[in-house]
Image 1 (cartoon, one colour):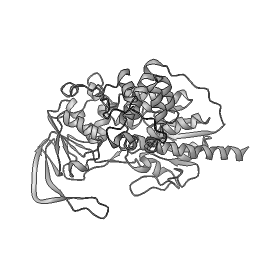
Image 2 (cartoon, rainbow, N blue to C red):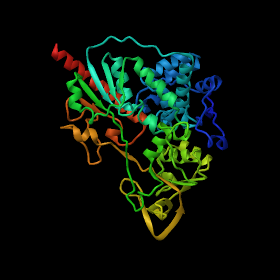
Image 3 (cartoon, rainbow, N blue to C red):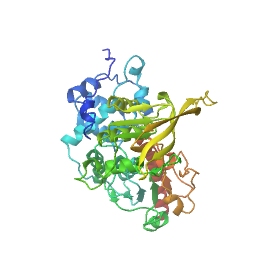
Image 4 (cartoon, one colour):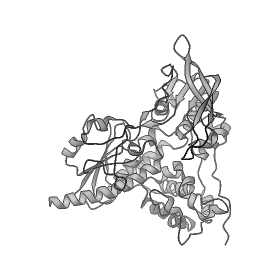
Length: 467
């Protein structure tokens, strides 16, 4: 049987409708669509797709179960390696990982692995209930800092191995960047909380409003009787342009803009009491997924014109192709090879426009990278009411500054052994954005899985030596 060359497209809201709401853009496969897409899989004897998955999901096995109509078993199979399948099915860049290695991609479209993962996990959520699991305890105790993707992954893996796990979360709700950084129309908050409930069903305790480094230090957590600690505090400190006018009213960091919009539900004001000021003309500086999210949120919050302002060309944009295409469909305007040099306000201190300069790309350097260079005397103005700075985030330095012996780089990222994710302090491990800098959800989860394996061995050796 010859597999069809084209993927089954996932239904989506029409652009003219979706820019007026925060409902999920992609509406998911029906059972018939999932069966048809799964039937394309060749079930290769030597599957290459798994090699591209940072958490080693048994892809051919779960797709085979979908093909057979065993949807709940398919979801269960995914969870053997991935505790957050409904999230990964929505925001993981499969096109650059598992799907990139699919053999069908040589002469057609690769299998839509992410869409099938989403289908199986959504099916489980709809037709099954989360049951608390009884897991034999080893006697080991682990602490995890942060409920982002790295922390949740470590907690799930260690709990399955029999260790008692407590997660310390600084915010009032679990989920980290999954809750505050990704819009509802890409990742509904109910989906994240369902995944959190699954983690809790494994016996994991989550302590909210607990900022490690302020309420308790790493050493004080050890003093509570924990055998090992994982730091997954993410990268929530925004980077800025450091140009004149950046302190004007109407200039936001993407962090503040998205936290207000997503976690604090400013888009439901006054039902929720967090307002956000969005003008008629919004400019987002940057071209990653965070920038796309910000520009698309601005449209939904009432902007008449929303720009992406990027100093490189379209080819260099770091955002997922799917997110760029969604943004274009929704009417986002792209200003390429454009770099802001100052924000200009009115007499009341409100932003009115941004002065920019045209850029050109240099010849490739030794690494093949082309760098943006300003074109002399090419300055021009763009009228803006609101500007959003989305040029990356750095780790919050609280833990690094309050933990003696913890080595960090000049960028604030924690230094670890990449094979084990252990820091310079025995028993303290770290992973995700606090180590790598801002990256993808799935890469943070991959680091979490490595750390969990290492912590398991460390805890067992510590327990053994104390007996």
